[in-house]
Length: 464
Image (tube, rainbow, N blue to C red; front, side):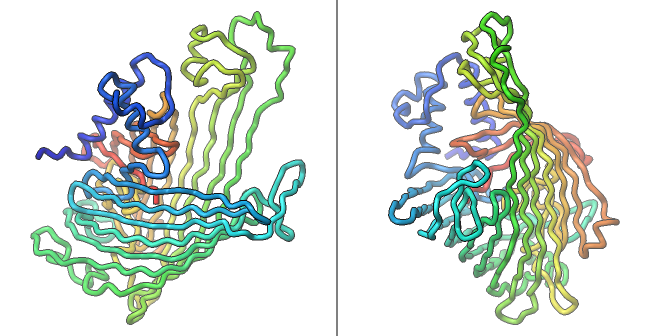
């Protein structure tokens, strides 16, 4: 049996999508009904693929296996149920099982519940909202109960710190965790979350010459000898604010005889941030207990315009390629600028130590499929503290394919003060993205800046 590598599979998907886009035709909804005709043309093939990976309540997925563990493929069950009574509520169960070509696997289950809290529907400042005491918000109080187990056969370790040259070592990790998260909206843009969970990590020993347990000890890889059960709790503040700048329409200007489509500018500003404080309590000896401050920011500016009158099909290149069709009031997408930042600061104490498998990594993608320095190997730099900043300009070419330009910068350090003197590593490049069912599921990129020429990389997103 010839098992293709993740790189080959990703390139095959891009070629399939390119054929789908290049071939003229009418777009269809995502539907597995196209599967009996999948060999007729590229459109039918891609419609079938979209249906397999999007239809409810059961669909396929290729996500949530960390990088370096082969090509992932799995199945997801999700069936949200709305309950209408004196007070509305919702239950949304999700079950997923994902395996990969190197034998790694991941299974998870969660139940998102919007309980029947006595909200009343009302309006404030001309906008509808759900009222609970002094609060009046678009979102409502939610509970997420979850449990996950992952068995990973290949994770990389290059040692701790900003070592300029590193040999790659490997280790296996099993991780079981579960808990509950409470989400409380305070305003339409501000919310507070609380979380408590148990985590049971383990590092199976191997005798391979490049394994971590053969080449390192407790001093050089803390947590290698013993992996206790941890009690993890956290509180966080999240913001999600949107501001749309769009001038009012002048109906007298939209005359039918105008030679070009009349547009008005539209800019969307989004501010999505999450700042949390985490406690990891070693329930056995306390030696590995530590605390952590984590900030995750994603600010964006979407540039575009809005058509203000109907345009005959095929008469405008702008409408055909930037405005997704010929309907009245279509939004034209000129691209989005993202400014991303991520910081992780540890509070360990003089008598404690932080396990290396909990320490943040930058380079390629980390264990949660978060991208950082893409010109470097996955997990390349690891230490107690890390900081990453990124700029990205992205635009959908033709759904589901997009393109982007990016810049990455980041550093790690043993203590926070080390970040000021640590090497600030940088890279940049170009890439393409694949979106299914409204989510970006895979990205491929060419990056340079590590001093090793141009590197091709890819990333499968984490959903669960």
